[in-house]
Length: 99
Image (cartoon, rainbow, N blue to C red):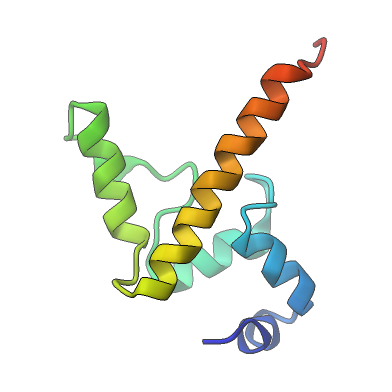
């Protein structure tokens, strides 16, 4: 499914779909939650499927497998999302907020 098709299906802009694909959304993003639900993918706060897995590596592998579509293209997208998360973490550690 193209970004334009996803945008049309959820009545959002294609640029918003691109931001979602890059991981640029909050846990309160209703559209992202709907997208995950319709795809049968656990959302950020839905970790019930992993409760029986005790070790961290096992939980991560289980979640990764649950979101990967099995294609090279999707593997590239997931890799980009994980690398973006890594970059975001480095940036947030470099510039901590005072709460």
